[in-house]
Length: 262
Image 1: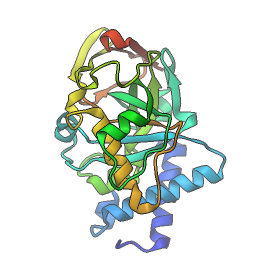
Image 2 (image 1 turned 120 degrees about the vertical axis):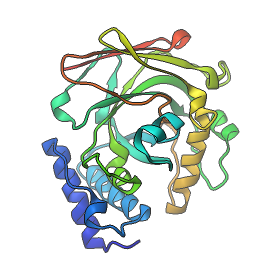
Image 3 (image 1 turned 135 degrees about the vertical axis):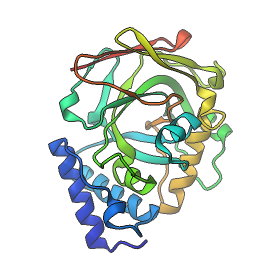
């Protein structure tokens, strides 16, 4: 780490203020070129702990930049992760208030809901499937509080991996009942298909991303807990949305998710 604790706390406070005010701050790496990935996760943890102290409840974690589609869209090739609080979860058919977010985009995901904890350092794809109660389609709403142009993985991680909200589908499948690699989705905005993808685009199998996360957080004394929802990573590029848009994502046998941008 290159940033001192006072700087880390100050940057976490800037990001928290940007979240409250729905604004954007200058890139951390523009101001602190030597900032590291460890610095950015430290900033994220301070922000997380402040949320917990204020009474927020963790619903799960999100994994980002796990597919070639997302890596190509951002120019960032290393996966990342963030925290999802319970007050950011929206049911299918719900509303996303665009004024409460910055740089609003939608991604296509699968969500793993755990019935058992998952812990590194040697968590495998098979471990994830065993520990998963069910898988359900989901959309992630991206919410970036740091200027997009020129940002790096350090900026994105510090900004809670650009997570804003999660829209959960209604269909639940046991991981052994369907070949998750072949789950496909058609993402439409106002009736026009903008993106399509197959879940194998996430590291060859979406459960691989969940195993990666369990191993990644292990050195920090952390693990994925039973009951947590884990977004495995998008298998399409993000689609920009604005107030007035209607979003529909058709997952075939796994159902349809909708949300309105208001």
